[in-house]
Image 1 (tube, rainbow, N blue to C red):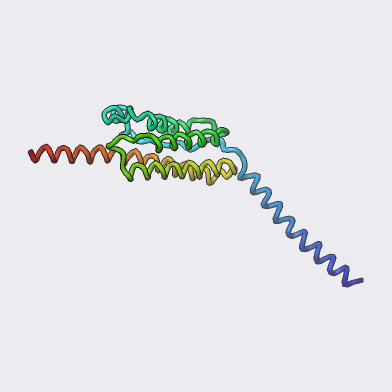
Image 2: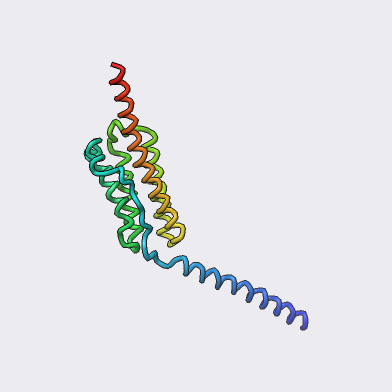
Amino acid sequence: MTRCIKILSLCIIFFSCDLSKEENKVENLNNESELLTKLPKVDFLEDFSNQFIEDNDIDQWTKFISFKESIESISNLDPKGITFYLDELEKKIQELLSSSIPENFDSPPIISRIKLIQMQVMKSKFYSENQENKKLELALNEMYKYYNALLKRMISFVEEEGAITGAKENQW
């Protein structure tokens, strides 16, 4: 009889300790799953201006312009709809990659940077759907970092092309 009481008391102690750990997990999950109240603000490159776009015929690349407008507007939108916005952005990136890319930007460095942004969008979308807000914020910041890297590379492509053209003209 005393043996049964000891076993019963050990079981009660064991399960009561385990239950308190689960309460802590539920509390942490509730804190994590609260909706984002604001999206991270980002500074986009000033060098990639409308004048640069027109001078280099990027305005003729309609899929890129649509992608650019979408990614730059996400930080200004309502955080409650972030999953929807990311889904739309993912579709626009897919359209961008399947569209004809202008000859002066049709190169592996540009395409790979677009694919990096696509991967970050998918990652952000996953975190948004699972309401992992801290990871979502980090993923969005990475997405914007990769986007700025794409713009910088496009600018450097134009500068390199100008330098090559100038060097050829000086030879003649």
